[in-house]
Image 1 (tube, rainbow, N blue to C red):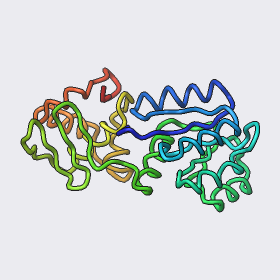
Image 2 (cartoon, rainbow, N blue to C red):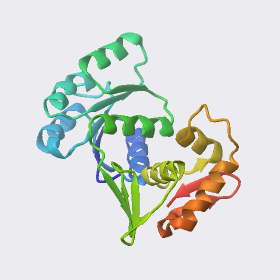
Image 3 (cartoon, helix red, strand yellow):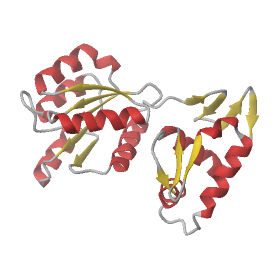
Image 4 (cartoon, one colour):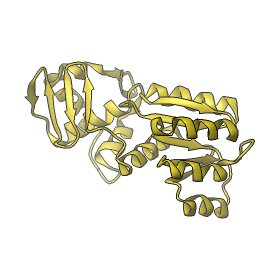
Length: 220
């Protein structure tokens, strides 16, 4: 996503592959490490190119807690992603300075949201998104296509940015209402259809929004 590079530190091959596949599907660049020694080497040698580390705690070699000082020294934000669910482990990780602590098993949508929150806090997200001839300026909340400014209503803009940032992920209408309009919104799911239709009328780039029958929408 916007050339954001994530280092996945996980010793279980299936979980590591699942994370890489899904993170790449939504646009992140992903590197991997299967143990603490490999992770330490990559953190030292490639630290300036790593925007975030997703780190299991219980890994061979230096564990996730032991790796954290290396990340901290290089300004790499860390999210611990681990089966260690006891309170003391959470407190230890957060007190050390980790940005977040997620217990396995986890929902991918929750993981995406937490990653984006960390990147926002750290100022890692770029100030613009480009899709085809469309440019979204995240600071001014303005959108241009083929050099002309396109007037979008606030929720049309928010929906566009959300879908762009979560490309290739299928969302139900209820899911989009919760993510974009907020959990407290009491409107109907038809609201999503209306906003998608408006985006398609106003932006050629909105052709990337695909309708998924009986489910919702996906940005391809």
